[in-house]
Length: 310
Image 1 (cartoon, helix red, strand yellow):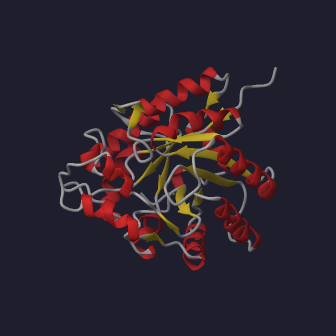
Image 2 (cartoon, rainbow, N blue to C red):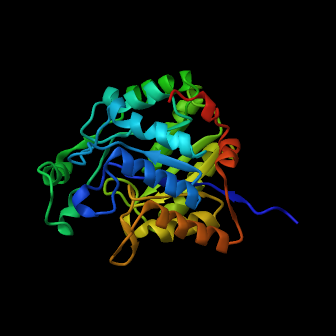
């Protein structure tokens, strides 16, 4: 009898999309981020995807000094794969966004595969009261803001990471991003297996209809064959339906409070670990198995946690 397929769960712990006013459960301080990541790993996440925050205001912070306190704690207390963002926030320059990954040389870093409109302003229809002065303008400003990742930017991030042995969670928000990845593959700037994270339901990117998921998968199959490992994340209420679909289609999954604050209709998730447990229940209910961190390292051909700089 064939062994059950292993499914990698990534947990995106805090992100830059949601603000502290949106949920009391969003981790903000280094201590909260470390605890949330460790709890998510204990619940079954092989990879934790990390942003940093200003501990006083919750504002996105892409300084290495913002990352260092929780990186060391997580590494000391967990074997999980640590994934550092190069996405940061749309308000940041590429150099600012790259600094943490360049400094700490993680096993995995995220990489948005293109520039795009990144519409967060519809959240203002749901959330009316804010704790900090920056939150409302940050969301409102997304109506006239582009997340910039040009070909030059992507090449710079790929080259810097590759020199350090870092692999990339390639975040593809639309079909064109797959073709951009193929362009860099053709140029030899990224080597297989490619870890393609398909992102659904962000305003400005591809939608969250099942047909969109199938279109993304078919296109990636055609472009990359068996040279890539597929994963899916979906924003907000689409999170659980689409990761379920991805698991049935041979994919891996990403959950976490960066992508969705919810555990059900009108029910805020109380922790990242709660969403990981929900994903694990789905995966195991399909007769599949959740990959351990070391199994994820093998599947993605990572360099190992002993070769990072933290």
